[in-house]
Image 1 (cartoon, helix red, strand yellow):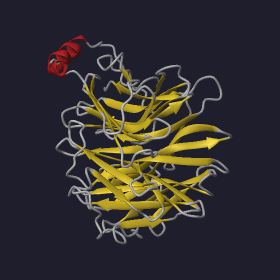
Image 2 (cartoon, rainbow, N blue to C red; image 1 turned 135 degrees about the vertical axis):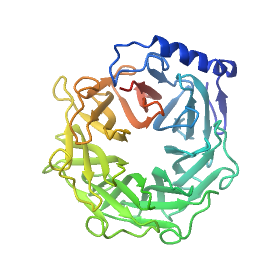
Image 3 (cartoon, rainbow, N blue to C red; image 1 turned 90 degrees about the horizontal axis):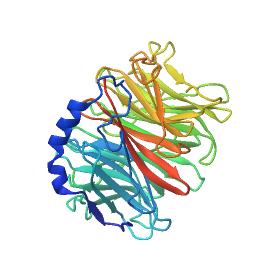
Image 4 (tube, one colour; image 1 turned 180 degrees about the vertical axis):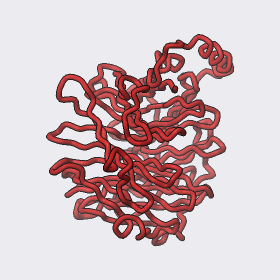
Length: 433
């Protein structure tokens, strides 16, 4: 089945009415010997959901959980000439509730990269739109049932023009309901800048933020910004990596803090930013941030040596320095075991209520996760020695791109699996302690 922009498919309503009974049955029959990190057999097919319904390809880089327990995965519906935002909803047992596509313009390549759920169940999806005839920051708001919310922006869509090509990588919701979006903008020198903006609740640009609502900053020849978190005081922390050119290799990871007004917080790091290069001549890629209750932030990604990557994360104090109580020097790297050499990369970090940290990504072409104590040590109670990996299909190109925590403590991991030239959205759920 192929869906066009704005099209929609809904799951079976009577089946959804049986959800409470089904959940009770599986709860009573769950295996008592299960280990934290094991796939949840009550979800989808043996803990997994694989979407092939689009008939072509769907790439899913972001996941969140609505207040009613419905899982929302957002990504890209590939057609080759007219790629659109794609949204898929699953009920708590891993059954399909709905799937839909939406676009800013026809016959353009558009891509959803981040989803944020509102307290009332509506959700915002951000990425690369094409409303102005070229790539721009784009946000679409959806109702709780997955239909576009036309009361937001222009027919449910908000486009942010930085005067140059741009796209969103991540979003975060303020306490007042305003939305901070971060990503990249590209100039004529083929270099990327941090590109950040703030939207009001109606989808219009908040011109009190930054310069006329926009912030653009460079921390290197190219600055790739992939993550954002917001503190209770309104300060904004962003993270990513810097490199020599947009097509070149990453050289270091960075974390930067801004005041609620969009100006750099110069009390953090060196004039508002800390840049860390791990290893001599190694490549560093950082994609995800988590903020602890004590104000420290964890930046997660990968360190690559001779084309072989390892999971990596760094913890920063509130002043922007590496936290020495975190594995001794503020930096943790993890190699997955297996046939040598195993290459892995972490794309997402999730902070658990007890202070433990979970990284998700890929190892040897499979979904891979690692759980750590609050001090950065691998947690042996999770998986095997703190690590676990599994294949969705052939296990050649499976990758977690996003993690979310359910209210019951179970972890939802979303990403993709590749079958030949086709990408399929893949979602898994893991058991809790």
